[in-house]
Image 1: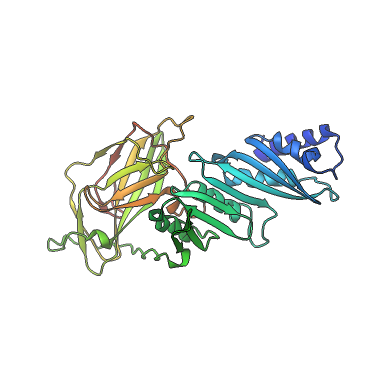
Image 2: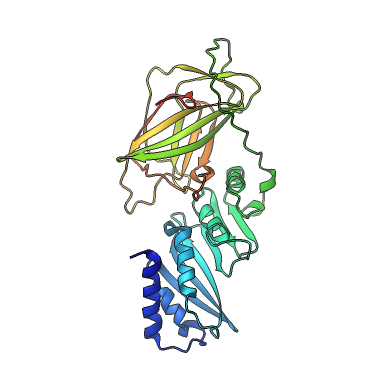
Length: 344
């Protein structure tokens, strides 16, 4: 049975069994019992306010924005016109205990449930460094615990098109406007990869490191990494990237990375990028909150590293990706840098 149909059936049964006046408020309102009966809801609080009823739903953030949208739609279905005005607030629970709150109904007319404030709330619930994200449908308050996380969280907001203007620290000591985040440099596909022995080694400051894709097949997992030459001249990389995998709480996982042997030197033209692949077998994740939410990537061992939340990767046509099934004690294989488009 489709999930939406199941939700509707559960709500209909609860409403039918309540025998309550639809115009009642607070815990007597049938919608409260219906919400408590929904799969995935851990706690429900009803907050009457005159002719309005605020309904607060606590649930696991892993259920996602799609679940939230369907749940709200189901609660509203068949609600009598003379029932109290309803507000629905969601409180996704994250492994770090971050304060995530979003008004899921009513929404601004210009935003839909998945792509608007609700989607934004789940985006930041899965972004390392975020300790608070509150969306009331009109404004957004996104906070990090440490000023060092402002840049990466604001970058996530910028590339994902979130309805956030400013990211602040929890103590208001620092902030970063999303509009001030440097735009990501353009990537130019190149078919000309010169074997230029005179090309200098790439300056880490001139390489844009990022997550550029993922794939899975028959129990194998793949993560694709990119290093774009943002400088004006060709430069070279040789070897394999250096990786650390971190949890939502930004804690490092103990993961063995097996590097490729005998890597070739790759000269990257201006605007082009080299690519490397991380491969691993599916790892057990049941009841394990310590998944990989962030990759700390350096172009080579000992080089400066860049913190890359999984949410910094834009997946065209899909919602943000928040985590990988790379866990403590796991092992991955890491290829050398190769020209983008080369076979692996």
